[in-house]
Length: 348
Image 1 (tube, helix red, strand yellow):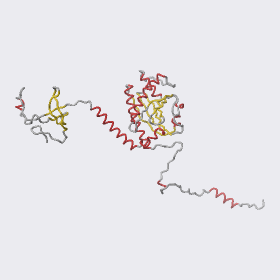
Image 2: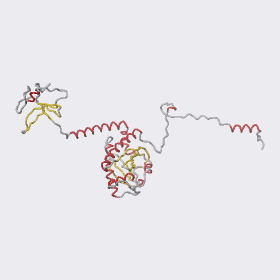
Image 3: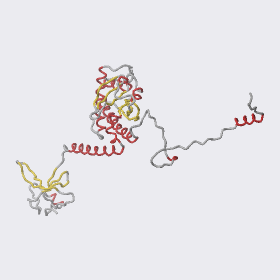
Image 4: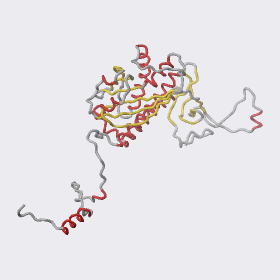
């Protein structure tokens, strides 16, 4: 073609050599991090964030939830052990955040899916119990030994449901007791379903907190899951930080412990003694004492006697009679540092 330049051999060799050489390095543009304060890009921690699974609860609050339900696990295990007359261990295995759809899709069918009402909080939570531990408990209640137990793949019968309600009722009491440090919540059992896909307590994409438990019963073991929607505990989310939970639990625990101790001691019997005067005698005089002998002291009979409780001076009282019985009229309390002279003086 007219005007077309023909490459000679040297031009062809130059093109071939250029194609075989590695490309020159291209420097990447600096990463721009926009913030109100100037920061060193090398010291800024960058972590991936999944918008499909937003973490709406902080790590401290998740740890507080996990510790709170460890208390529930201990109380529930102790209650089941006494009810079933065998050792039952319940412990927290994990605590995670996920969507409600992810939680439902990971459950077997059939299973024991139970709705739990939690006034005054809005909404409901759900408690799922695996058939691997559910049927051994029912077998134990009916007198079985769980040695050759077959776990059926079917919905529960009416009798099995009634027995399960007794078990879960104890779990509701333990759950209410565990949450008492945050707020008084009356957990109660609601509807029961065998297919978790038929129950929709929140939208599929709603964030939920799932507390996983491991339940061991002699030679059997299974799982249990407590699903708490975020919108149900949102009013309490600020109280679930680790520090405030410890403080709140400590205050409530001290008050409750003091009341329980006072209630237990209120019915205890104590020994009272009243001492009017004291004196000293020799051992030979003590051996020579006989019925009818008088021991003379220098303290007047009208002086106040010291009323002792379990051997410790607590009150000053006057000795007298009431309806033919010996009686003491308490005058005042004795301070711990006060010294009472019963040999001849009244008090110092």
